[in-house]
Image (cartoon, rainbow, N blue to C red; front, side):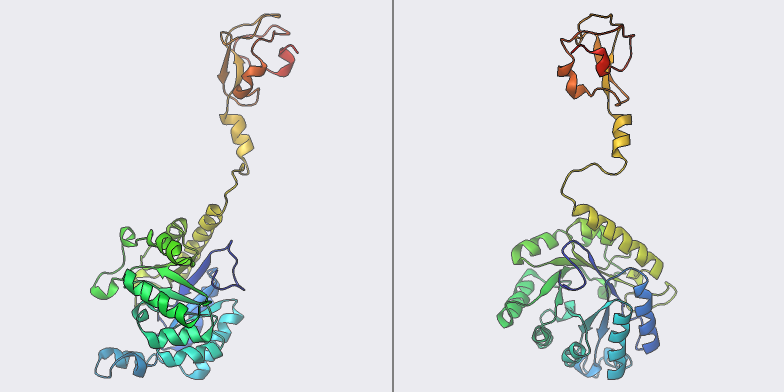
Length: 337
């Protein structure tokens, strides 16, 4: 996995995206961290920006993001609070000046936002930190993915990063991405082509989509969290509340554990099911002592507590040691040596 000290190859890495529901409110940001810790996630992701690096001043977005800036002290404390709650802190820096600062404050990983996959100022700063990072692929074409890959490995051939597949249509007026539009098969293509871990950014509104993504090959999943559906904010239509998020993570982890099993072994309880559902060798008519066992007087019926049908070769041609009524399970004492 990308975050080596938190996860191994045998574990799903689940990131809760805070989805900017703090709206610049520091206390709410801390609350989101504390709530995320209760969901079973591995990390929390914050989108952070300085408006002067993000929008031209005449754009409405400038004034909005100016109100969402955190002080240096607050940023440091957010990372510290995440660590105190046993979470990794993933920084999605929408301002290049924040990258080195967040690295110094102890951010565990970075996410190159889908809007910045062609933004060399942020890409270069993230690579320079030598921290693990994600490359988000929503909005990206195949040629853009190749471009960012080349840009990264030219600067650091040993860079530790993962690709995150996803689609993003909300800015165009769609409330969310439909499951059939998630293009989950892209993960396998990217992983094969670049030999890097791949994951999924979930922009559907559903609890079960992370589990489906895991079944399709995701080793990392990110999903948006809100404290309540009553609260509106960026991407609120695709968010889960804390209880839903906990359920989604639990389900995704169960699926991840299941698909890692490659040895075909009996599950707990299957022995009992075998005895109920399998068949045994039975007499289909009355058999007298000394009679030969043949397919004319033997058959296969439930339950499976007797001699299995696959052992019929050990019975055919032998003689009966006793009278056997019709429709009885055979056992070894009825069969001559």
